[in-house]
Image (cartoon, rainbow, N blue to C red; front, side, top):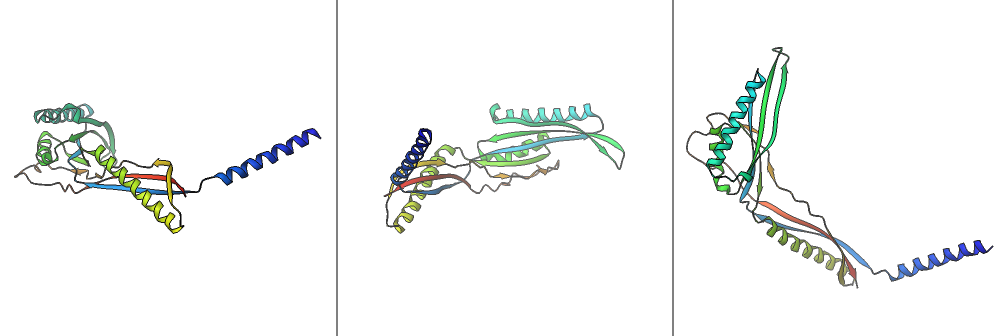
Length: 230
């Protein structure tokens, strides 16, 4: 009997504590906000490719290596810092042509180049084509003031979240109190142009011209905030 009584007492005490906690719980409102800053990019990460095909693996690799060497020497000649270009992928594959019933080998290498002065894009691409690249596989536009714009976007995101909270609270004839929980939901995204276009050997001929539509990029911040309601 004593054991049963103890169990009943514990249950009643727990239930009473839960009711007190519920009664003392501060009313809350949870909202989200987004801040967006639109800027003109001033730099870009460009992915270029070198590809050679042939019947002999060693010869194909040798040709590819020679082109890569020429590309690196060109990048050095325009004083591009070594940390601003990097090999991304290297491959040597054997393919079988069922029509011709013979094998061929494909050697490829891709290099990512960080261009910190986007006005030099056209001149640099002409030089790279002359050095031997035969594809442009993509370009990511960026800004040198990323951290500064991210900070501005976060402030705007919080302001939007608080505005929402005030709208809802006003409709309830209540007021927004202090923030209880703040959650950063931001995901960094860089717009990427996927061209993967092949370059003909004479594509660099003629006068220099503008071939890049820079446009704008958006730096965004997303936040969720729970406020007290008074």
